[in-house]
Structure formats: C-alpha cells, structure tokens
Length: 222
Image (cartoon, rainbow, N blue to C red; front, side, top):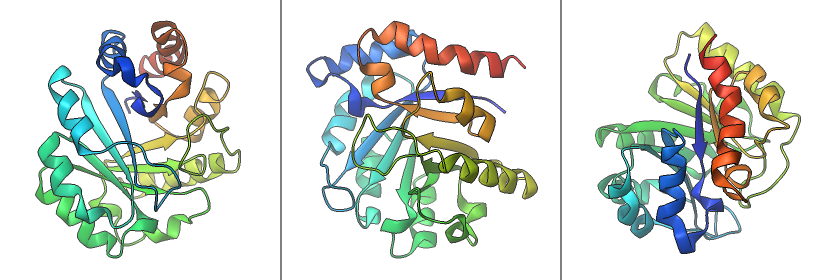
C-alpha cells in the first residue's frame, strides 16, 4: 500500500496560488486536493471550475476534486472537462449515489465517495465495487483549520478492515485536522491518502510539507 499527502489549496494563498502549488510539487507532492464548496451542502463558498481549469496546466499532479456541493451530478462533466483526475462526492448530497458514480466513471476518471463524521459506513453497502477512493471526513466539512474528531479514528479502522476483507483496490483518504500531532494516529488507523490544508500552507510551505511527508516516507519504506 502506498501513502500519499494531498495538500488542499483551500488553505493556500490565492494571491500566489500558482507559486504555492509549484512549491508543494517541488517538495514531491503527487496529489493536489480541491475542496469545492457551494454554500448549501456546507456553509462556506470556496471556488469552482475556473480555478481548476486555470491551474491545470501547471503540473502533472493528480487533481483530487472533493465536491462538497448539493446534487454534485450537475457539475461532474464541467470538472472533468476542466482537468479533474478524480471526483469525490458526498453520499449525503447525492439523490442517486450509484448513478452518480457511474457518471464519473463514464468520464474515465476515478470515483470517490465521502462521508461526514456522523454518517455510518452502512450507506456504502451497495456501492463498494464502484469506488476507487473512500474519503472519511475527520471534521465536519465547511471550514479549514478544525481539530480532528477522535471518534473518527475507529471509523477509519473499520473501513480499512472492510476494504481488506472485500479485497477492494481502493484508497482510503481522510480530510480534516491532519497535522504532525495527529498524523501517526490517522496512519495507524488505516488511511493511506491524507489531506492537509493549514498544516501545509500556513507559514513555510516547504518545511511544513516535509515535516508531514517524513511520516509517509517512513511508511512507504516499510
């Protein structure tokens, strides 16, 4: 199993967004995370298709689009056209999750399903075989800089068990409160893709990224 750090541009400096992205790429980042918010599914509004389209030419990184929006099927084609490599939708926001995952796959990109902290894993029961990456929120979505909810660690562990029991070839991503104090617990619980926003983009990006990446490098060498 490979471990990856996915810096979230939600916490980047948008005055220098291109420079911030190139900095994490030079540090070795292979994933870039896009937290798209609509002000309906979550309280905040972030950014949309034009931002993704404008920065797509910058790097060959995996553009990991996380749609925190109501009825995300409305936007899949637009984000796919803009250059998304993977699109993650919230089970809570989809009227027909199965159909939405098919729509993503039809565009030839990776599918993801996200669950809020209080959403049970049982909602995934009939779509496991259609998911390329599961995303467990370890904070309530909508704002950056929140602290990880400890109870979500048990949920990560249980989903990792399910992935292995079913022999699924899917990644397990976590989003929320990942920093140098929590990263070991998150990795031990079973996650292999870690979204990090303020813990990377607040301050010296290079040193902050490398401080987190050191934990993943150790796991990848085992």
